[in-house]
Figure 1 (cartoon, rainbow, N blue to C red):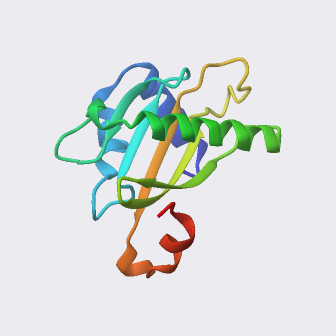
Figure 2 (tube, rainbow, N blue to C red):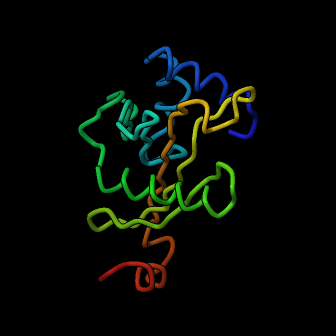
Length: 145
């Protein structure tokens, strides 16, 4: 989302618990032929609010991996500390036998961008790195196996 208007709306949907708007504009973009393989939306304290990995199912909090959320919140804190402002954090992550690139950011608004004053929710999105497409080199160097 490059335009702040999208983030303003997303912030409003999360704060209003507008399940339909969140699904229609965010959660419906998961799956093999979509932008993300999974999406988590977390409250400002890191607790899961919404989780999507199948557009036919809707939000399913049972898919939330606590290791994924804790690692990505740490990535976000590190990125913010290094830049001095809220940043987008990214990381490679192996979940089971699958390698992902995962990004995390705060859902900021255009008017309340002072992170210390407002409890902004988090957005985590992941894309599966297909070994057939990438070949074996990234997995050899980026995984623990």
